[in-house]
Length: 440
Ligand code: ADP
Ligand code: MG
Image (cartoon, rainbow, N blue to C red; front, top):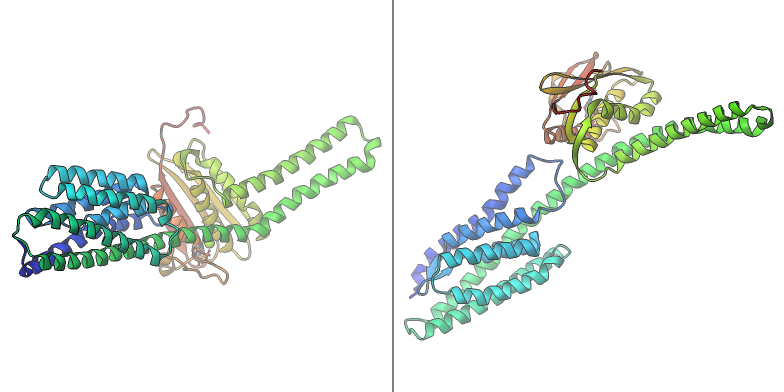
């Protein structure tokens, strides 16, 4: 039996449901936000499945029992969300959890639910692969249509099952279903609106990372071109020598010249390869990295940029410093830091790069003797768009700081205005590293 004065109760119950639906994604996103700079394009399907299943269970636990034990709640929203944002498998997983829990709670209306959800699952599974490409207006429209049809089915089923019992007012039932449908659509739209916002922010962050990488790469391109021209000129010179004086040269001389030409061409090739692997990194992956080799490569990438700015890089690299880490990210961190050090010395100078280890950590230092920073300036490092350079982006250190955090490291900065700056990076060492390499 159902009376209008229960509306209060119903609305309270539904509002509670709405907050239970939104709670998991909010908590999840706020955790993910900490990992800024390391977001992947889509949320993983199993994560969506778990979060929506939690919502479903919460919704059902706090359902509103009406009409002889029928349970009314907003669990359809997390089910649809699961299909739309996690894909078909995620959706099916969430529906399975829902059925199991409903079976466990068994009360009247179980068969109604099977009818209604057969419809919902089929439609949602059909929409699911296309959802991502829909305009937002169409997403809202589809969500509303599914809700209305599902509610209509539910209404018919409830009507048929209660009509025999007689204790029942059709007007009240219609009013209730209209209200319920309205609230469901509003709640669903609100949820989609919030989730779309999350997706948008995610994409923005990925775009930021990409822009910064392109920017750094673009800034380096001119110096890279310069760097490639040198070995090519040398190689060409040797080949011209052979071409012009070929007859007068001994076989050994020719061989020697050719070898030098090949060495120089290889060098140019290596510069290009390093540069490309930096600009278009392969998939993210963790592997065993020899830090000294990696720093050496980062210095090679920066070599031409340094030379162009009259800066020389001194390397002091201890062997046997191993990390399990993401090679591309670590390289980008050092390219960014070394680039800043070079730019901190407009009149040229020297940079000291050191790698050493203690029992627990690998320590990497990059020290320049350039413009330096005040305490206030140091505090602002890593803030997006903080840059004191006319053509700076202020993104290099933001990305680097986030990467260091993701890779489980720490970053310290010591600097004095007018004297210079030292960036110190500390990463937990991988101590099961190969033995033969540790005595250098
Ligand atoms: P950008 O290099 O594009 O300006 P970054 O995020 O790389 O952006 O650096 C932000 C700011 O931090 C720089 O503009 C500069 O003022 C300061 N900075 C970074 N590294 C150094 C350094 N080694 N010496 C002095 N200032 C630095
Ligand atoms: Mg920079």
